[in-house]
Amino acid sequence: MPNIRANGIDIYYEESGPADAPVILLVMGLGTQMIAWPDDLIQGLVGRGYRVIHYDNRDVGLSQRMDGAPAGSLVWAMLASRFGLPVKTAYTLTDMAKDGAALLEALGIDKAHVVGASMGGMIVQLMAANHTDKVLSMTSIMSSSGKPGLPGPRADIRKRLMAPRPANPTKEEAVKMGAEALESISFADSSRPPSAFVDMAARAFDRGYYPIGMKRQLLAIVADGSRAERLKKITVPTLVVHGGADPLVPKEGSEDIARHIPGARLEIIDEMAHDLPPSQVGRMVDLIADHATAATPLAVV
View 1 (cartoon, rainbow, N blue to C red):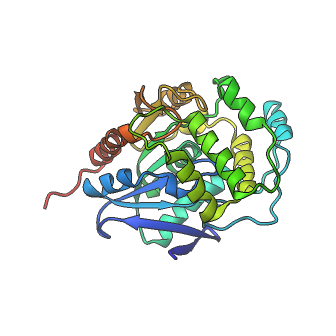
View 2 (cartoon, helix red, strand yellow):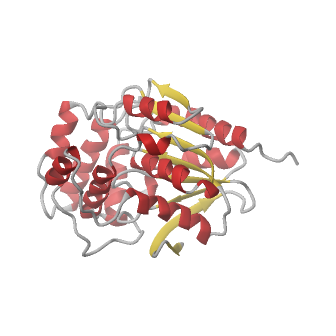
């Protein structure tokens, strides 16, 4: 298995495309394994001349689990953050951004175009702010600046997130909950196979079910607070993409990102929610590849 030691942890990654091609690094979101990146998106980027690397964040999938690390009360963390009190976490989003930069270093890659979805968008924001020497361009997808006062999840989605869950669910229970959660935040895309959500939830369960890792990642998001001031120091070319129908992280989150990054381009896709719907994958390939190519044009052979 392609595991590599980076930033003091073991990271599972996969890559596609020519070894000598410019690199696009894909960073996935909260509690979500790297398999959530659509294969058509990866192969589409390879077809545009890129070497594509995607990986499991720490505490998810096949990357290192932070077993024994604390996972405190989410409610307390949210209250503490609201009142400016410190939030104790096992690790931070800054640590997770270091993971991505260290992965590139361990693979011998000088610089890459970084692309992140949801929490992954937050991670690549911090990579672009703190690891400028490793970043050629940044694309943040369906993410947020974390600035206080931005709209939060739709009421029904918030209720679902806060609902108690079985401590030790069976596979059937876990897959059912996972599929329902995916469907609730995704765009009703007629081109998506009827079994897509169940298939993804089952695949994720079999590959690495580890819900406490998601809790620790969520605490890291809460503790990170607002990135608004940090975003102002990003100088790499930036593309910000968001679904107009996103019920989990409303589009105002990305609008605020674009406001704070000098020269950032904002793209709102109405036919997208908090997902990468099949009908929009080709559009996403073009947006990401065109942005990367504009930042560093590919050599003409």
